[in-house]
Image (tube, rainbow, N blue to C red):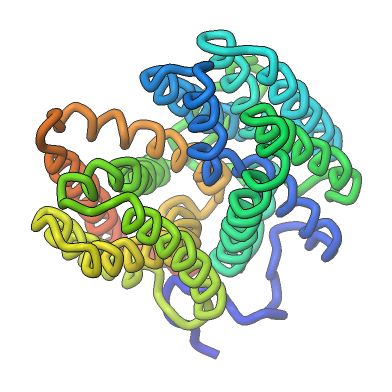
Length: 413
């Protein structure tokens, strides 16, 4: 059976996993702990916004707290991928979950810079929780499918948190109710960790760029093409988060009222669920390079739409398309990186690269805006899309021209 280039192979094909496949309970546990690790990325406005309203964070400190946690999250994934071996995974899950509980409970008593330290600590532990399902995704021969499932679960969990916590725990306890709820998610990660696989098979090495570990005991090999692919996916995340962070000032400059903005954000979140779900369903039948091209073209069109300062109906429609395309593309990033580095070592580090790009995006966009015009953020976002597309096209052409790259390109079919 011939499968579209770059797509997932049919289920049940030989060699579906590198090493033993996890049990269904093990997969569920891995996706659960990863969802806990990513929870803050979708609920941050609710949690940190409440702290600002209570005077425990300034507006500037809100941005600093976001950057601190996102950077720590990305660093946590990258350090875990470079230093940890895929052994004793259950203990990693229990330990990281415990730190998430502690950091959030500490946050209930802190404000200002002390709270920033709490969020950095939480981010490092969340990064380890996210690394755990990353180990699974990198070893699956259907990475786009499982990534789509993972992203859908994340988004649904974040939507549930946003729908439930503000009307329950936060009514009685304010911002501390939000932090206590996050601590509960850390407890959930601890509870399900014993169901995870205890270990995964080591990934093979290749003649590649060698990165020494901090501890100096083991070395991680990642090809130059793998590093370039990680850079491209980091830039794509910088675009997504950078543009998303400026939805509010863009809508205000376009003359939209807060109700229209809330509708746009809700529509974008709902579209994200639809996008990731559809990606999982069609991952066997579409080529991931073609998805990247469609992602870039669509987002260029959206950027031109936002530059024109559209009225509410068109702004909401553009936000909906933005959310759909964002999450539809993300699952296909795994096979794109695996094409570049078939050892899959780069794929293990993909979540960290995405998070570091996501942390950098709003900062880069902030350099191009003024108090009266925020459309410079759209220019920066467009440059990120262009850079992502350029790197991907160069690598794709190289693989097509160099026979040595052909087997690697077919390895994720």
